[in-house]
Structures are given as structure tokens and as C-alpha cells.
Image (tube, rainbow, N blue to C red):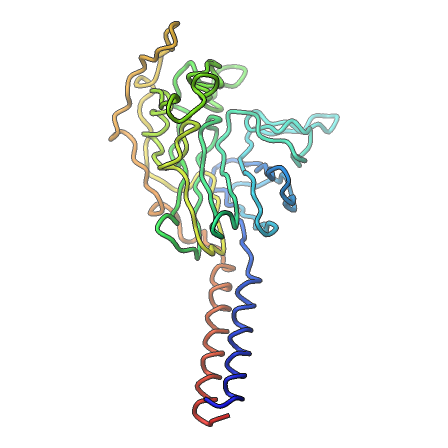
Length: 324
């Protein structure tokens, strides 16, 4: 290869690599619930804020958000929201107590299903999880697009747990006719055993309780208690998008309420709640995800990258053929 052809190839290769770097991560929120969800967003301390901290997502709608580079924070869904005559905005679950649609730096009031992200973290990887540590209020699925790695896979809790929530953890409407959310044992009882605090503040001393195992059996890839790291944290290299779906399509059924009901912890701090049969709930994973929800922007990103690489390689072969 002569000097000119080498320079030409280097130029197009640099152009391709540069274009790859400007393709930033995008979060795509999809609402497949038969009701409106008001997503809340909170950036981690010291992290550049995202463009919005709260918005409305009607049934069937989607919204794309591009975060700053190396962003970290969490998302959740607020439900049963309304605005009073004074303009104060409140939600019955997941409220961030800002009094407005935007959460403005406030986090979710438990119980709430959380999706947590750290983009471009250790080793340049994205770290993400779906957590039930603060309870549950809406099914959620996170699906990475375009990423790589053995642990780059979908996660979430796609099962409707509201009807199966034990009575001691249940949050209901004022009239008691509607199940709104399911609290964690930590929030419900406040004991160090369930909160992984005090003498239980380490992985060696804080173990799964029968309550957290009920959540784990229902949603094996979601965090069920504070030290549930090994099976609940996922990583992706160079994912172009993350699709966060509320109420993803599923035929999964939750167990009868009888299997959870009436199991209050003993006064001595021990826990006698029965174990939920592992076979009564099944995590469906990426297979339940409706591919029609994948936005056209995913295809555009891939098409642009592949087209530019093809063009660069074609120019290199032309340089070789004609000895430019």
C-alpha cells in the first residue's frame, strides 16, 4: 500500500470510529399498561442531570430521552396521579413529593419498582438492574439494544404482584377496594433484619427473608433485598438503547393470594412465612418482549454505523485496486 492509500484508509477509519463515539445511549420508555403512568427520574449525586425529571406517559405511548455521558440514576413509574384545584400534583404510588409533574431532584416514595443505571461505569461498561428492595407498584422490563457481553440481557419484574401481595405488605386505596402497591418487609416492619442495617448491615449477616424470597421467586432477575447482587446486576458494553417498558406483554400468572396471606413476622424477629413454590411463577425474560416496541431509531443507528463502515472499506479496496 502506498502512502496516499494508507492515508485514505486512515482517514475513513478515523471517520468511522469518530462517528461511533457520537452515538450516545438512549432511554426509550414504553407504556403498555391499560392506564397512564407518570415516570419519575432521579440522577445520582454529583451526576449531570437528565433533561427531564418527570413526565406523563399515556397508555400505548412512548418517549425517548438521551442522558448525558456517564449518567447514573434511577427511573420508576408513578401511578394514580392527579392535580388538585391549587395545581398541586400528587400520586398514590411512587410520588416524589415535589407537588409537580417534574420530580426536581426528589426520589420515589416507597413502595415503587425501580430501574437503576450507571452508564460508562467501571471498565467502560453500563451497569443496570431492576429493584424491588423499595417494594413494588408496577411491572417493569428493561431490554438493552445493541450491547455486548455475557451479562448483557433483559431484566425486570413482569409479573403483576398486586393481587398476590400479603396483607401485611399491601397498600390499598382509601376504600380498600383496589390494590395499589406492595411494600417491602423493611418498610412494613422497620426491623434491622429486613432492612440490612445495624447488626445485619453486611452480606454475611443480612440474608434473604421469606418475604424477599417471595419477590425473588416471582422475579428471579430483580433485586429482592439489599445484598442480592449476584443474580440481579447486569452489564452491557456499548448498548445504543435501553427500552424500559411498563406492563410488558406476558401470559405469566401470579399465585393465589392465599399462598402469601396472613404471615406476620414473629415478635422474636424470626420469620415463619411459607416459601413460595419456585414453579408457581416464571420469569419469561426477553422472550416476552414485543419486538414491535423497538423504535425505528435503533435500526437507524445500526444502519448508519454499518453504512459508514462499508463505505470506508469500499474506499480502501478502491485505493488498493487503483494504487491511489
